[in-house]
Length: 211
Image 1: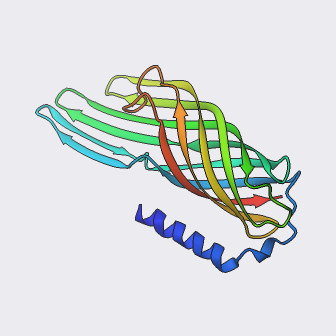
Image 2 (image 1 turned 30 degrees about the horizontal axis):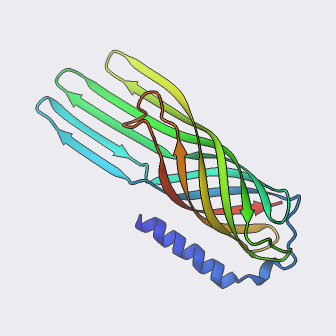
Image 3 (image 1 turned 30 degrees about the vertical axis):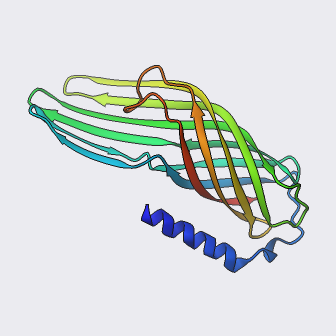
């Protein structure tokens, strides 16, 4: 958490230092970008439970979210986005007198959406607030290994994300973004990790290369 806050503060300092004069006369219609995103989602948790019959330890890294995205500017005010991310990763180990069990799971959102700048920007506007919305599939996977058996399964759920943020254009080819959003999805049929639903807010920053 502290590392992320320091990284975000450094990114914001770079934005303020570079200032908004580096992307003068920037026209985006018809251009594309590849974006790399990191952020926070939910809360991280590490457990180590001791029972009469054994020990269960676990690591839940759902505090981290990240992904890779593609953006296409349909106009100065409208962007088409396609993203693939990592929303939750969990791992646990259970040891008792009868068996040893290892379990891991992950949730991956695959979303297509739009980003709408407010108010209507003009070419050369280097700071562009936006609203965003996306829908798609949330892919949940889980693997379980015991002494004499192995099990792996996958499930999908429909959902989407709504959000708001700001794009900072540093030059004609580079941009930074800060945004917050909320994931809203249907339940998985069975639990992935320790839950069927991963509705939650997120906050992220991203860097993009425009071409």
